[in-house]
Amino acid sequence: MTLADLLPVNDVAACCSPLTTAPMSVDNATRLAGAIKALADPARLRLLSMVAAHADAEACVCDLTEPLGLQQSTVSHHLRILVDAGYLTRHKRGTWAYYRLVPGALDSVAGLLRSV
Amino acid sequence: MTLADLLPVNDVAACCSPLTTAPMSVDNATRLAGAIKALADPARLRLLSMVAAHADAEACVCDLTEPLGLQQSTVSHHLRILVDAGYLTRHKRGTWAYYRLVPGALDSVAGLLRSV
DNA sequence: CCAATACATCGACGTTTGTCAATATTCGTG
DNA sequence: CACGAATATTGACAAACGTCGATGTATTGG
Image (tube, rainbow over all chains, first blue to last red; front, side):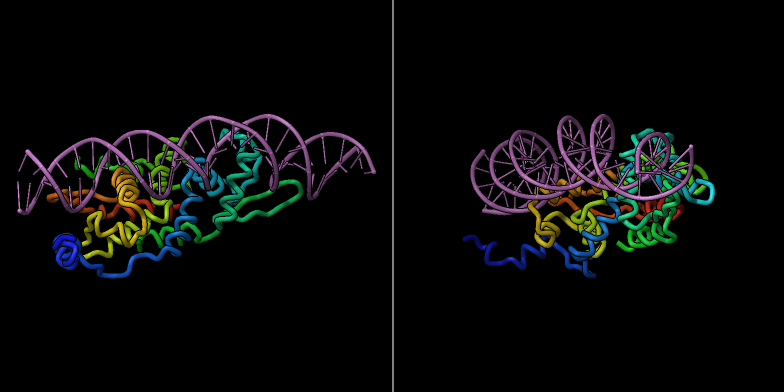
């Protein structure tokens, strides 16, 4: 055992400085990371922007598949992730499924990011 | 041109038009997704908040390893991702590496999300 | 110099993710 | 009711990711 081992406080003083406010909890970090992860994909960002840019701010899968350049099953997969994460809603009319942005959802995540 | 202009996050901010007007290009979506992906992890979000909460808004790896509950090599790995993405800067003083938030980096990404 | 410290990098491993093809499900229509 | 169209779900597979232990690289102090 060395002298340094007996003086942890001095070691801390040499390098470490104290926390001024509490850091994010593991729980909150996990939840926020989950919300962000749903946005961390080029195809999903483009889907969000396509829905937002579409007439009446809604779009069905058939509108999105071709311009996105991915298979229909893949588009459905991404849309599901965006719905589950709370960024889109899904309304079925006939055989078509129409997707809309959830108002304020992106703002909410953006606000959380600012406060990190 | 400053160093900050070369950071990935600022690149994204510079070249992305608001999502409401037109669908995102594949290029911009890929860049923005890359910037977001760096945030899409609980450990990295906690690292950012720990650096922000620290005295003088800077922290070295030794400050972060124990409270984060991950190995030193893993912490270095995450810090590198955050530096590469433009959210943190790294300054070496002696054997210690001090990390600081890049002012406005998180705001920039948050602003892009809010514009949808 | 030599040893110790702080940090970065590398190699490996299990897990998650994005994509497609195939199949299932739901709904309108003849 | 049976068929076709729009969408969802499943299974498979390669690529990317998060984590660790071991090793490499500076830097300080004796």
